[in-house]
Image 1 (cartoon, rainbow, N blue to C red):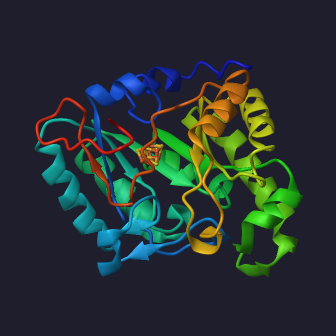
Image 2 (image 1 turned 120 degrees about the vertical axis):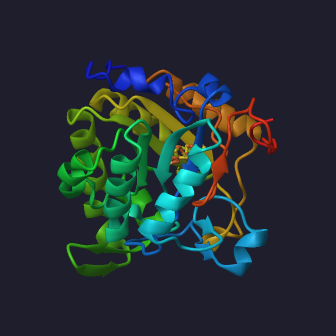
Length: 287
Ligand code: CLF
């Protein structure tokens, strides 16, 4: 396992509830759902926005899309509770396919420079967006990378919009992977706190996640978060991994990259107080 460069980012990990399990005791987070559009057709994903979101859960879900001004008001309101540490943008689409993401990050950084800014991305536009993300004050980011193999990627992604062109079918897979891995390496070099998320899908990615951990660890990523498939979208008929399969995958990958094991697969509009805060309602994942 290659230790990440000592840029100060590693010290932030101790405060971030999605990098260090014990940080969830004291630090809360809020997601701002300002990014409805997407540029990658992940077969395991389903965006649910609006009234249907009442009965949905997980990434891609939001009651409604906020404008950047509404997002600032949301942060003002939550920050007043006294426990907010991280403001994240994680959808409900791809944050870096939506101009509102950068505008929102800049506004939040200006209004609340004390808060950590976090972003979740599929990585397609990451390398080119990095200068603006750094300028906007982003501290940490997550890149979802499920595989190192184009053949697997071709089973995961139905389409992609790359450089303004739309690719349909397996032809996009090599470029999708190349961009994800280049974006990850660039983010590490830039000194950000960086995590890789991988979706564990039995018989598709279960044999790939270890090579993801190996390569991401060698690049210098700080954490790896293996998330179990939520059967939905075009994978609604597939099964989720069992708890034993998830544990086994995490244990295999731990050899190469430190594993985060407390992900709650939260919504794109989640407000998550620290575990000890008044009003925290435990979900199945956080106990
Ligand atoms: Fe949000 Fe993601 Fe930042 Fe956390 S979530 S953008 S790193 S502040 Fe956290 Fe939610 Fe799991 Fe993501 S529990 S889905 S890992």
